[in-house]
Structure formats: C-alpha cells, structure tokens
Amino acid sequence: MKLFIRFAAAIVLAASGNAAWSQTYPVKPVRIVVPFAPGGNVDINARAIAPGLTELWKQQIIVDNRPGAGGMIGGEVVAKAPADGYTLLMASNSVYSVAPNVFTKPRFNPVKDFAAISGISNVPFVLVLHPSVPAKNMKEFIALVKSKPGRMTMATAGTGTSNHLVGELIQISAGIRMTGVPYKGSGPALTDLLGGQVDSHVDQLTASMAYIQSGRIRALAVTTDKRAPLLPNVPTLAEQGLKGFDATTITGLLAPAGTPAAIIDQVHAAIVKVTAQQVIRDRFAALGATTLGNSPAEFGEYIRQDYAKWQKVVTTANIRSD
Image (cartoon, rainbow, N blue to C red):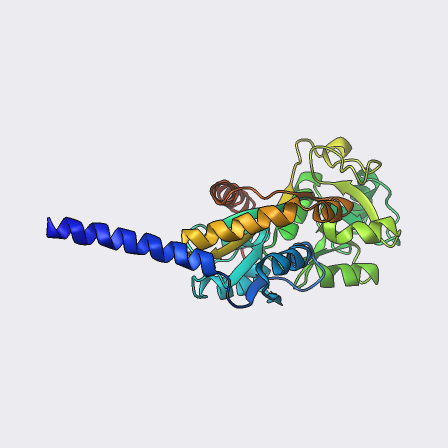
C-alpha cells in the first residue's frame, strides 16, 4: 500500500511540475537553430515566425544559422542541447530525412534524437537556370546538357540536402549528368547562380520566387504533380516528360528528444497561432508556400515516413557521403 501511495504521489508531482513548467515557459530568450546559411527556405521560415513568437511570449527569438554538412552540423547542435525548450531546430526534409541517410556517419537519428513540434510550411521545388543558359524547356535543357557532357553545372544547398537529391533524381529521370557544386545552403547557391558562376539549381520556391519574378533567373519546371499557383505558366517536370515526378519540401520545428510534452504542446500552440495570422499566410503565399501548423503526432509520423522513403532512394541510387 505504501509503495502504491509513493508511486501515485510521484505521478502527481511530475504532472504538477510539468504544468508549472508549461505555465512559466519561456522565461528567457529562445534560440531557433537554422542548419543552413541565411537566405534559403529554412532560414526564411525561421525569420517569418520569429516576430510572432516574440510578440506572444514577450521573449527574444534568436535565429542562429549553423550551416554545413547538409544540415548535420546545426542538427547536432540541437540534438545535444538541453531538452528544456530553449533550443529548437528549424528543419526541412534535407535535415530530418535526406542527410541522415546520405552520410555514412550521421551525427543524429532524426526519429530518436528529436521531438516533432509542428510543420510550418509546404513548398515546391523549382528547377531554375541562369538567363545565359539558352534552354527554354526541359527538352531543350536535356539536349543542351547531353551536348556538353560534364560541362554544365548544378548548384546544391549542400551534399545530402533534399535540393541535392531532387537534383540527382531529375538527372537520373532525364538521363543526363551535370557537375554538382555544393554550397552551405540555398542562399550562397543562389548568389552564384545569379552571378552566372553556375548554370542551374534546384531550389525551394520560397527562396527563388523574387528572382524568378524579376527575371534574374529562369524557372524551367516545378517538381510537384501540379503547377504552382504563383507560376501558372511554368509546367511540371511530369508534364515535360519526367512521368510521375513529385517532390516537395515540408519545413517544421523540432526540439531535442526528452523535451517535456507540456513544452512541446505550448510551442505547438504558439506556432498554430502565428501561422494562422493572415499576414503570415499572405507572406508565405507570396513565396509560393502554404502554411501548415499540424500536430506534433502528425509531423512526427510524416518524418518517420519521409525518412523511410528517402532511405530507399539513397540506397537505390547509391548516393553516399563521408
């Protein structure tokens, strides 16, 4: 009987402690680690929600860019951080699905080392070219690449990123081969594409949209099964002969594994409030993205499924990196 009473008391104490923690969180600045350089899709997501979280919590939100190794460096920072809700990770498929499968010695396990909080946005990839590249559609682009074996270049947001693998899948599907040029994020890759140092790039529409609209780069195709509403005149890859091609980016927020459920729920509730604001929805829509705000359970299940999906792709294509 005494053992039962102690056990029951321990449960009550833990529950009350969790509730108290939830009520006081956050009491200091919260850091959101972005595992890529500034200017890319993941960075855009973090900086879009930061002001809304600051307003809700009355605490500073620090966006901390930690680029390198396909998102592995920044992801490791968060995986090893205290599980107290004050260090969070803004991550896309590159970080929680692709890089852990590509690297022979991954620095974390995305399923075991993180607690999912919420998806933030869903955005298509787009194949973009420097204006000096004469191809106006995929048929012309494929012919051009084949006429210059090994001389055409494709920038990536880093080895092992989703941009990298989607680019690889495009080349495999089209039967072409380009020279890959890895960067520490889409921002630097876009900078060199704009400057004509590289010929092409597979990027999230959020990061490339402004440059497409200004005519500084040319959108050749979107990777989703349907055309992007903001680019109604840009056909899908499937429409241009790459049948069944469909790839998208889900960007979301994660915490270190072991973060109290009460904290996860509180951060999720804040994300739902922020992404429900019309100004945020309009901002993402202007970049070709849709806001999500799904539950921790839903986002966690998506990560598990996407991780398994890319594991098969990496194995089939034999794409590995040290």
